[in-house]
Image (cartoon, rainbow, N blue to C red; front, side, top):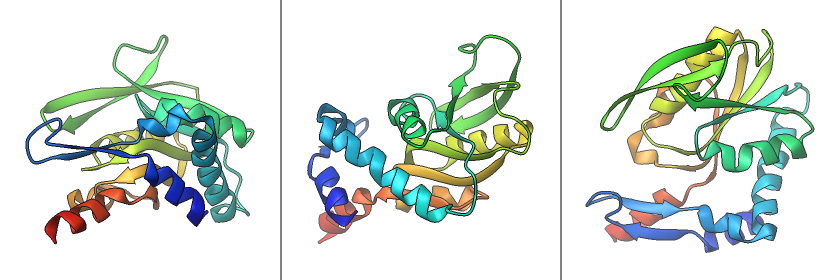
Length: 188
């Protein structure tokens, strides 16, 4: 898996001062431009989950809007399990559970359709990046409403200096820890 991680990191694009001054934005979208890299991304997550939960059944992948939708369904398909989306308010039909969460510039509301995950299901919550942990915590609260068990949070990248994982009551797995390296390089 180490070679795959190196390959995935090699295509990340860094954008200083985006979206605001002082932020180093790392774009992982180039991974999706190459089907081989996209496949490596999916296989890295799949291999990790199969090793980590070899004695535990994973019932579904729960993807957080919007970038969790880019690879969540592919991972679920590769693992022969279902995919369930968490969306922003007003995007899902039918009855939904809702939870408000704080963002950098205000608040928002996430929803999940009632009945989309059976009570007692084991789920993996998936998103692109964990920063402050606000969106992941909201997803966790929705899983509590569903009476599902969050086995793990999985992210492509983590902004470790924001300490978002400290807010979460389940293990956290991050595939690429690029931001940490970028900051260390920048400080030298």
